[in-house]
Every structure is written in C-alpha cells, then in structure tokens.
Image 1: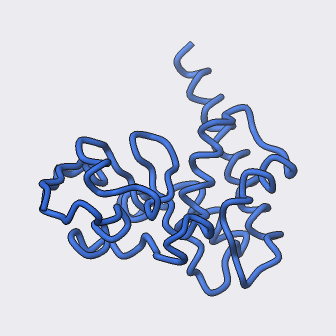
Image 2 (image 1 turned 90 degrees about the vertical axis):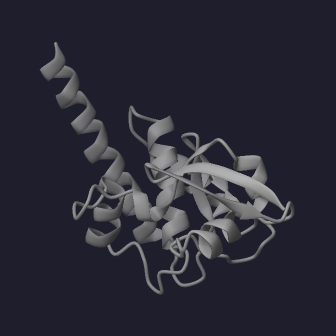
Length: 166
C-alpha cells in the first residue's frame, strides 16, 4: 500500500492505495467520484479522461501513485457551482450525447482540446483529436457541433476579457 495525496477539484485529498491501483479506480472507489467512467481499462475508449496538472489524461492508463502530488480535475469539478462549464452547456444545447456513458470523457477531452487551440477549432481538428474517444450511440455529429460551439463561445469570452484588460 502507498499513500496517495492529490488536489482533486480544488480540494486536498489523500488515501492509501495498492501500488497497482489505477487512477480511475482511486477516483471512483476511494473518493466516490463516479462521473469518471471505466469503459475498457485499456486506454482505447476515453470514457475515463480527467485533467492531470492541466492536461487530458486517460485515467485508466495512470496509476494513482503516479498521480500523487498532482492536481486533478474530474467532470464533477468542471462546472462553477450550478453554472455549467461552456463545454457542458454546449453539449446540453446541441444534444451532444445519447446514453451519456462517454460524455464525461468527451467533455474533459474537449475542454483540453479547446485550451490547446484558444484561437478556435475547425471540424477536421475536432474529429482528429476525438479519435481517442469512442461513442457507440452517436455519429459524432452533435458532439462535434457542441465542441465547435463551445470553442467559439470560449474564444469570444477570451477576446472580451483581453479587451477589458487593455
């Protein structure tokens, strides 16, 4: 057993875990954060995507002890209280989900994608970058529309903040 100490969704947490415990299982079983889903345990589906130190990571491909000392954001920590994150709002508005199983991982991957492309995204980039996230219910059309809409909203918000600062 090893001690694991993390900052998860803005709160400092710690616990013990076997050295072989995957981060996804530590989040779900030790911390009760079940929004991060276990789909394949082989890093193929992307249902388990979380942000580790600001970068999207498939949490089934990382040991909890490897993440010790890191800052983690899960789907539960993305919204600002009752106010949805722009990507969550866009998924709702553009019906970017059906069964919802892949949705947390898609949203976490999308927020990372948008952060890495603050100038905006195009459909080809979104589709290419979603290759590591599998949805079995949709044709991805509404997911792509939602990500593009959120990217546009967030780019406009960033430009507005830059104008206010100037």
